[in-house]
Image: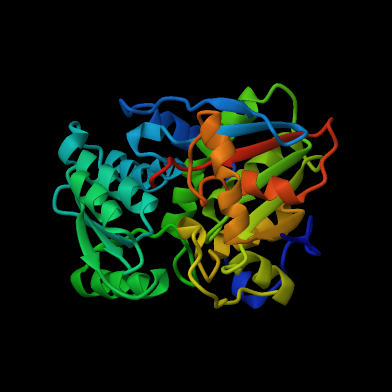
Length: 343
């Protein structure tokens, strides 16, 4: 594992590419009020995890809204917000005739599929060739139409964007780029529900917070909220695959960059370019960026499974990075178990 300190901590990254990009929201009230109207919206547990030499807690998102990951809070919240904005008395068909389209490595697509179905819209999810067919079947079971396109996430996103523009569909991505920030900014706001629950349930403020990242939506939203809740004291470490250091490389370059590398077993985190909103927030809020190998990501899984916390290399990446850190017994660490095993 490699750890890189963030030279922009506290001040943020000053570059032209981020000049008009909003920082992550910390307003949890709006998503919390809207999501609490959903019949499957229940609080997820904070579990103490043993075997790391320090006190470690994991926010267990595996059961979130029956979708298996924290991303249930994202796209579904955006779609619910748009349904509520119609003023319709019956929200079950408030978005009839609308179509939401995205590219996904899985979990974001599940959230879009569930949200679209709940409010009468169509949901179309583009998957790259590397996404397992089992995930495509999950998406179809939630009512989504699945389209295969591209060798990787970036190519499938290009295809989704082209289709959205050609057909007048709403592109709902969990990443953000120049000219596309409004919907992903709201989507990241949904993740604040998870962060707020974790902050409320921690017995004491943490000394360390480990946040895994792909494009950075989870990490960016959570880091912003935790800074608002706990100030500068916790050391926030963002964890990425060493094959896809989109955020770390951008921090090092002083501007957003596109990275290259082999396919990682951390499939949900295997993103080669950062979300601009997430990068803007994490440049200000993260203390360090850790890069872990596929082997390190796998190594932690048996011990977690033995504690009833079975997950994937992506879902447990924050916990996996603890193996490369020297923590004193008095340390209090908050991690996110972001998806269920088999995801």
